[in-house]
Image 1 (tube, rainbow, N blue to C red):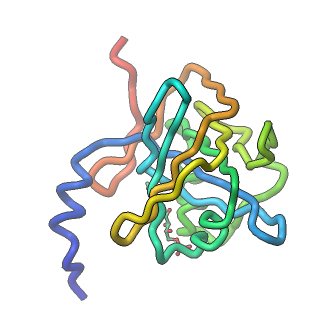
Image 2 (cartoon, protein in one colour):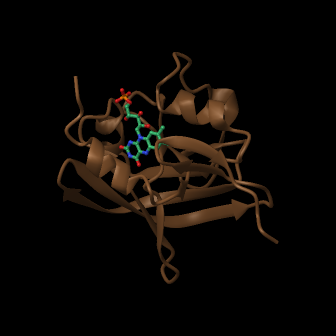
Length: 160
Ligand SMILES: Cc1cc2nc3c(=O)[nH]c(=O)nc-3n(C[C@H](O)[C@H](O)[C@H](O)COP(=O)(O)O)c2cc1C
């Protein structure tokens, strides 16, 4: 079956991005996690970020109800984590691979940067919802990023 959105996806996919894992607690307290490349920094004062969640995602009900989420930015060597949290692989999130900071949202222990966010706005946008978060705590370390480009992974190499 042909994908009628392929040409648009091909054009959107020419914008290279990093990759993050957004995670929250569902109503039962279990970790819900999804691989994302729609993460964007928005504002410094107050510190705001956003990412876009597809309405049909299996994690939708958890993220639409949560008051906080964590976003963990992946290193170049974390392609398997990206595949896992995109639900391409059967193994789900494990409690022991996440930390809890201010809000209680799960942050991956292995990361290039972490953002612990309080949800401050939700905007419907076509077949996605935009989840705006205020950053309550963050960190970052040096290292190479995992990159998504043209539906494929790349390992980023800093030029200096
Ligand atoms: C690199 C990458 C980036 C992705 N970015 C997003 C995103 O920003 N928003 C989103 O809703 N889904 C995104 N997805 C898709 C989800 O990770 C996931 O595959 C999708 O929700 C299907 O999972 P499900 O079958 O459990 O619903 C991305 C997937 C990959 C591999």
